[in-house]
Amino acid sequence: MSRKKTSGFTSRLKKRLTNHLKFILFDEAMFHEVFSLRLRPLNLVILLAVSAIFLIGGTILLIRYTPLKTYVITDDVPALRRQTALLLSEVDVLEKKLNDNEVYIDALRQAISGEIPAEKVKDSVYVDSMSKNARRHLKASAEDSVFRASVEKRQMESLQAAGASSRGILSLSSPIRGAVISAAYNKSEDHLWTGLSAKPNTPIFAVYSGTIIYKDWTPSSGNVLIIEHNENLTSIYKNVGLVPKQVGDRVSQGELIATTGLGANASSDPVVHFELWINGRSVDPEDYINFGM
Image (tube, rainbow, N blue to C red; front, side, top):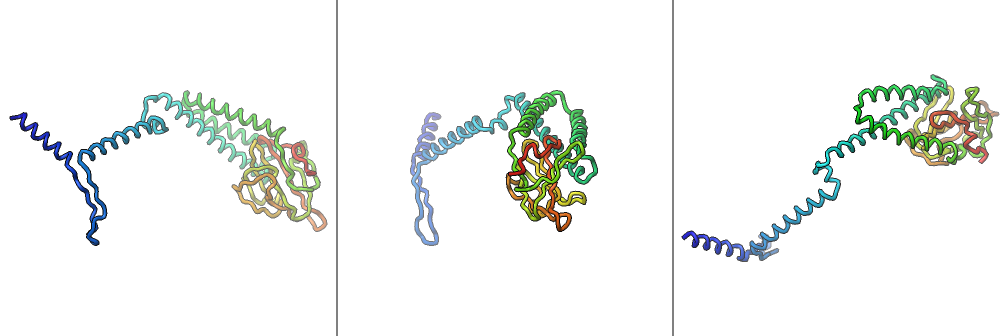
């Protein structure tokens, strides 16, 4: 009796799976058949099974051979921790560099306004940076300190290479073409700029590509423009006239950044005070630029 019931159920199920079903899409407004499909339930089951296999297989491959593996499979926890610690250390170093740049720019502003001597710019940046580093390292764990030391070593090697490049390889162009040097650089007398004399409204160009980080007027230096370049190089243009650029603008080497203003009197030409700083120290612009070009 039980065998007959099982046989009957099997035959009914087989019949249902092999019977043809017709799916019809009917437009009631136009009273006509739009689309129809004849399909056996068995074919539908097979189609769904194959689709599920492809979906599961595709998901496995996606997780196995893409970066999603990092977020889903956590079997290599120590490696993930090391990578996370290294990334955090790099972020910390970049944050430190950003803070140092902000301190450096602030020191330059104070030097321009006469609040601190120009030769103290490097020292003030160094002291402030060291105090911040000391506070930061007091909170660092032993493992994090190892990664930070590794990253900072790479950063220092990069800065040292950049400094070497600045001393001998950079090709800087003259900020004013055809200008006459009216005052020479003399660090021993705290004369940290080269005076460039030119006619009023003469174009002033960027000596190297970089970003404008400062633009303001001061009582002692008139309109002042500071450009931060790669290779730890900074160029400063004081006593200029019209400045069409804004802070944050990127400029290319030889691009117009300002014009000369007016002379002290009707019979004299304006003099632009040009300064060049490398690695936070003032240098003689004539050692790096041929102003006769």
